[in-house]
Amino acid sequence: MMSHRFTDKKGRPVVVVTGMGLVTPLAWGKQDNWGALVEGRSGIKPISRFPTDGLRTTIAGTVTPENGCFSSAPELTIDMARYAAQEALSEAGLADISGFPGPLFLATPPAELEWPQRQALLDAEVAGGLTGYKRLLAAARTGQFRSFFENFQFSSVADHLCDAFQPRGLPVSVSTACASGATAIQLAAESIRRHETDIALAVGTDSSVQLEALIRFSLLSALSIRNEEPGAASRPFCKSRDGFVMAEGAAALVLETRSSAIQRGAQILGVVRGCGEMADDYHRTRSKPDGSAIIGAMRNALADADAAPDEIDYVNAHGTSTPENDKMEYLSLQTVLGKKNLEATPVSSTKSMTGHTLSAAGAIEAVLSLMMIGAATLLPTINYDDPDPEIPMDVVPNAARKAPVRTVLSNSFGFGGQNAALVIGTPD
Image 1 (cartoon, rainbow, N blue to C red):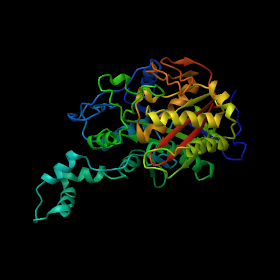
Image 2: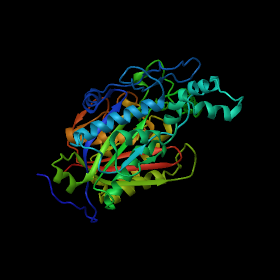
Image 3: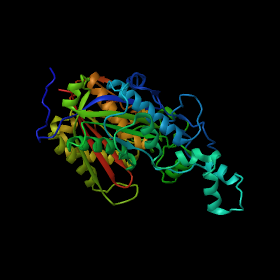
């Protein structure tokens, strides 16, 4: 029977989740995604939306637009966010209301013009004899290129979501690299705990598989080059891992007080028990060698949740499939949970199937964690055919596993030393 305790042990409102939405390279929608993930299917495939001749990496977890036509990364980012948010609101019983009654917290990638749009601006006819940057600005302000101005800016995704769902107040957009999705959930939970609102919408979305972003990550030697075997390229915790696979997706969660959810008669899907973060300034892309910020983020999440290390039943790992990150996460988990606890705790990476969805990853993995709790099923780490002897963990290899799950630790670690962790629990 569900407990009706409305505050946690620290006297704060209990933050529950009443609606979720999901888009990944595998499918649009929660249920179709769940079916594919339980089967251990990969969403990684050869890139077809732009030429890849001469590139070291030619694969990604791309999302096929619902209309089948890709126009630009920002438009797909907006479409996926809108879809995920609508699915979450429908599940929460809020689809038919006029205006979402709480604030929006959005995780979104940095905004920039892509090369085709830059070329279009350069080729545009502009009156007045303007040259250089002034010519580009003038072209961007004309009717033909108005969509560039409306979509290719950091606030554009939030603006479109506000038009669609009319949340209360000004939206908050965050971009903390690969920790962004978890950061958005943390901000939403904290706003509820501070009694600023009874309900909030947290969304993470990212469609960064475009030519320039792919080249940048490739120059960092961060991407897998297992182009001949796309489905086997993302292989977290394997000895033969050679980098992460870029991917796209979106997730949305409706968070509210337990009191609000019960009053509305909403189904409670789970509880956001704790949030933790810690940053370091060691390097633009590499984690601090002693793992102190990663360790600190996880410890802060456990402390915020008032949870002991042995309460964690499962870890949804950041697990990117890069040589350094996977080893660092294992060592940090061993420090936080203790060697003996870690040996008994399943730790899998859903990125083995979805790829790394960047700004959306933390939100997507929070949704998947809640679905694992609800289905009493652990999603696998696929492609685990070459175990790394230096990472001796139960990674739920290659096949989903039935198991009761009450408390999940979900990790999100980003470039620039931006780290966040969530502790998510059962509804009761």
